[in-house]
Length: 346
Image (tube, rainbow, N blue to C red; front, side):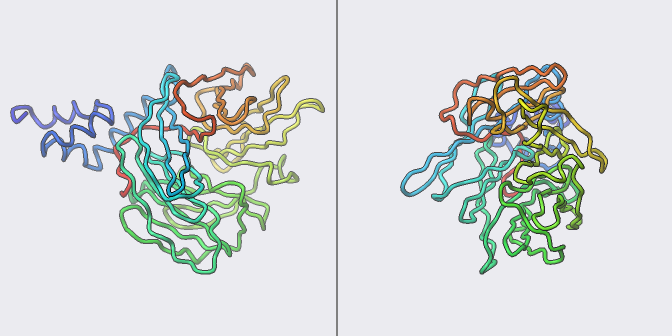
């Protein structure tokens, strides 16, 4: 190894998968210094992301399902490729009911009903529990998880009522309260969505979408598409697809006989209609879009209830079921995933 030039070692390592690199950290000090270097981690992530974007590759998914016992809960993380689920990590956590957030740079954040927040990298089996956020007399509502590419830090926001926003920068070790904010309410039925450096959620007071800039910590209000302005906001859903914020109208009517969902994408501050999803015979009001691959949208919970996955082609209107073998439970959470070397605590 000592006779191999360092640039060549770098070129070899950068092509290896995450699990191999996690083992090679123990090979010697030089390999460890490469693999743990932030610039190496970012370059490796970009290569993995570019590979995921190739048309012939189905997206890698992270599937999470929970098991509850008398004294603790266990969350099972499985990665899915080529319709096979592989168990990666099963960490025990304090007993609670947990909400899992979409994967961000290979990290997964999840939080409990009683306010405990965890961040983990399922592929490297690295997990941290965040300290409690001290806000006495306030009710915990929700959490969001994203990445600040200016500071290179992952950040967690915690929303409490009456509205206070707490923000935690991974690696800094403490929460900060964000006090300067407009009087926006918060709809409880979904956590904030992270996309392109912003958190987004529905406001219950102004009938708008609230954005929070993760870099500059600035709030703004965004007007939704006109077609949904008079609808029940409990029928609307925010999601990130293909790196962009999307609004899903679950009360879309194609005609008197068929209802489905309509999807709008926010592109350069303008709403663009991505398309509608309607099945000929089945209701899809329990479905949620979780991924975008070219002209296909991956739906979770379609037709057969929780646990079913299907691709919907926006051009042809056809459905393509995704049959996954190896998932231990029909009740699971799923999101698009890219394996990475990011440490949970940084």
